[in-house]
Image 1 (cartoon, rainbow, N blue to C red):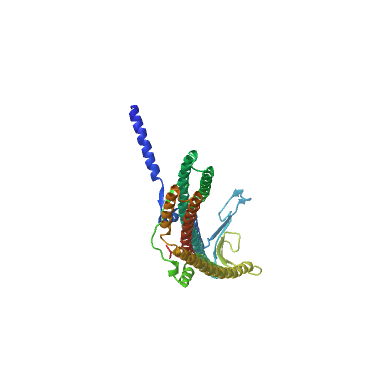
Image 2 (image 1 turned 90 degrees about the horizontal axis):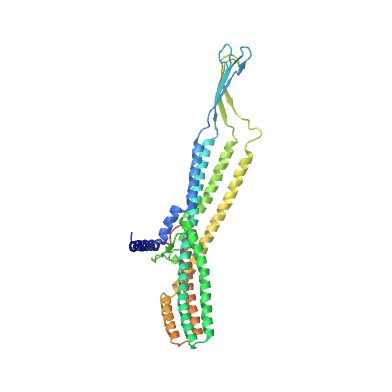
Length: 421
């Protein structure tokens, strides 16, 4: 291979790598992020196995007790000097088989308790899903608008750097004062320091997003915000949101099911106080009367001292505690819905009061400001003040938009629904 061919091949490899590097960035909108979350989130996958474990408890509860088989043989006959003889003349053996029968419906009560345990595991899963989904949506919006704020700083750093270079030239020519150059340098350093702080927060947001979606730590992500028309919170009555929360909140269903679990456990523990019966059939060759003895036996404990008093008391206390927890959960639900609804209305009102053309007009104003400054129609101090106002305005707009979208996500969270997409 000639040197030219080698260089050409190397050039093609570098071009290919550059092309793949450009396509390595994963573009994600919110729906795509939610799909990855449902498919890859480790906490959800682990919680789903808890449901399978709870279902296995139903299988265990349905099983009957195993029969007990007992056998005894003469080990050594000192008269014949032989071991393990079984003949009628010189041996002896006895055997029995018994079966335990549970009374008072213990088996059915155990099955119902296990079925309620499955419901508990399912509602725990759905409540975890509700919580993590809110975290995902909130993190998505926080990351997106933080990235937009970083872009604002990058634009300002770039333009300030160009301004500094121009002023350095003018300083050498003696057309500007050194204090003006120092002021611009100070502004540039301040912008870079603030941007680094934002970048650190942004990386933390990306880390949380990758963990929620099950993405690799080194994955490059670019978030895309769908600008579709959304249902406004002020279009939905508060009572409708409250009804949705009562009907859909998994944590409320979990509290109700926990009360049911303790009620069924109390029934089971009361049934456990009733003794079970064990019936057995036995055969004895010569160790009983008459020889070749066949017997039918029954065994039942006498509930003289232990009547399962402790477990019954624990189950009764469990019902009281579950009832209090349910009342607390109902009060918490109402407060969360009310608070989130009021917050969402305030954020929507603030966003609606912002003129849609304000950002565009402000950008136009800044362009004119730069031209006027270059033409020396305004002073450096005036320019820097207005330029800083531009930055603060853009950052504030990003914050308002994030809080608006976050409050909608919180309404979905507290109502257990997907009303505000």
